[in-house]
Image 1 (cartoon, rainbow, N blue to C red):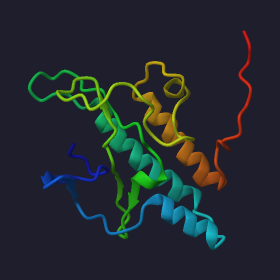
Image 2: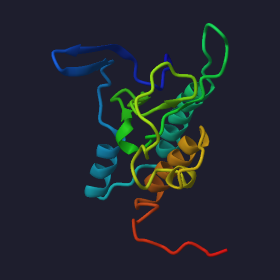
Image 3: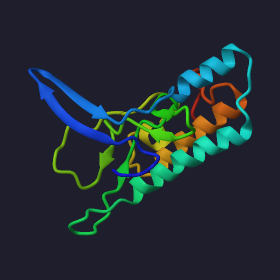
Length: 168
């Protein structure tokens, strides 16, 4: 994936029994660290800054979601599946980069790494994923909405406390 808002993977490899991914250097913190620092020092991230960051991530996601196979022009239907603060890097120069497509799902893939299973961080996973139902790129949009909510309100959208499901 080649997009200004997706960190570039430069190399994949293995040394003995250890696999590695070499990525471009993004000189700055991840959004999780930046957010925790802001909360710890009682500073607010300006709403315009939050909107800018989320808009850049949305640009990168749109690129991934609409990417096509160069040989056939068929949609790849890539879904990141792990959009959260820790996977958003903010460079010291203001560049915003989405990282960790390691659990990404592509409809047309040549290698199957596992079957089923819940991928991503709790609190950012769309309801349809939690229920084991089919999902698509909208799951990433849901997760990015959770990130924006948390940036603006300075609190988690989901607390982890169990709630009852409405009965039919």
